[in-house]
Length: 365
Image 1: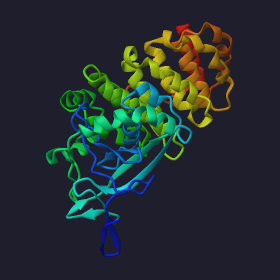
Image 2: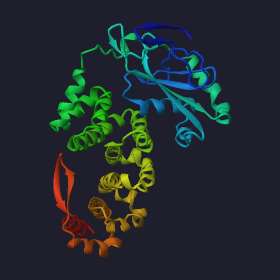
Image 3: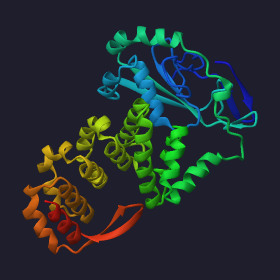
């Protein structure tokens, strides 16, 4: 491997983590939208996607997996990590120089990029690899004018603008911005990890509304976003924070397009630490399209007796939205529960008692 020293850090050419071979610079597929992640394939069959910023690894993982499956989304979503494919990540990658820069700075630029690698199980790879190589052979280098350049000591004014609009609950302005540039999604996603819960809720709501605008012309981008959010929740190595709320907001704003992702929320509800978020997301969807969820009503009724006040409260809201007469008796009992919880409504956090939420649910039935 070729390399050179810069102080104590070795700058070197990137190599495949599966076989050790030096890899080529990732390229942009001709079948993809401009500015989507460049990809490449190693001689061993490993496929890699380049996240230039290092902030969208969930998306990079999805990009590499889908390309490895020769753009077969159904196949990709049904594969299991470790069982059907291996995944690896290389950090400190600089796309412009095509080098690994451990020091984090090169020629005055901050280097924070990453390469995300996927290698499918051999029997699956035998079916997909020929098509993958044909696609990447036709790929073109990414024009240098489209590569985000991050100079040390400078921050993106666009990020600041989006953050300010979310903090000010300026949803209309965010929607106007989304009509011009779908990359606003990236800046909104960043806010899902805010330490301020109100900012997380507002960001999730904004993502849902912005996604509805983008999905009218580009549903594929929003499908990829949904899969990346769900992957971030399933991946125990990363915090989900506002991801589940964002999924609920996206589906509730375009249920006719994205209802197919609801079963993934049913799977997540088995995880106690995610139950509040999932119930909240399902309640949001149920308020718009109760018919999509009503068939599994009996899965939720036992949660009305849960030890957690939030789980009881959000379950009551969900069952009210579903007009669940089957839960009338249990909801009536909750009218004697005066425990308070916080609920996000119309851009603010409001306090309600479980009794209030149960009574409101009963009024809907």
